[in-house]
Image (cartoon, rainbow, N blue to C red):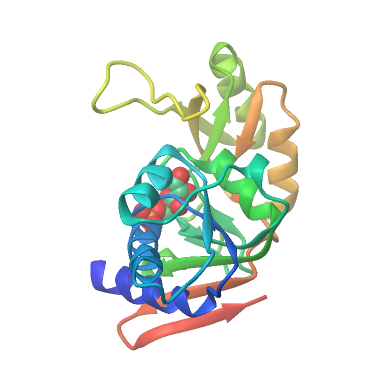
Length: 227
Ligand SMILES: O=C[C@H](O)[C@H](O)[C@H](O)COP(=O)(O)O
């Protein structure tokens, strides 16, 4: 599995050119990409490339690996964003947010000229929600009310608990995460919009209609899916 992640991360480097502003995703697959990108920058094979991190994790990795970083408020545009995903359906709709970074990821990836997704073949599903719950970032005081309201969608929501801290996971933005399991997600775009309409919801992990290219690591090599 790690080999497949490394292979897609290497392939993603082919999309990066001098003078690009690159959105840096979060997670284990993107971590390889940031490492390799830093190497090319340090070896001066790429010039004037800047990263815009989507989380503390990607910011720390970028700094550690020699990728200069800028905040979203310091750039005019993002040429390309590169990130992993938890599920990818045949229309290239995604579920993201296992690492609780979904809000900044969506803010940056929505604005990128190209959104490039890196996954291994285990992430491909027939329909979203097949394996993974939909993470929803919520204002802490509203978590219980929202968890109850989610039941209207024929779903159950669970507050995500931390493993190296007592109590719930707190996101980079200071919020909580609900993991919602839906019986069936018929229309990802519709559900994405409806969830964001609930007061107290900051953002949800359905990324419908925004991925441009998905690189899939398979045992037979890297495959490219395009919308
Ligand atoms: O919040 C985390 C992100 O959405 C990740 O990009 C996603 O969970 C994929 O991570 P990984 O590449 O580690 O499977």
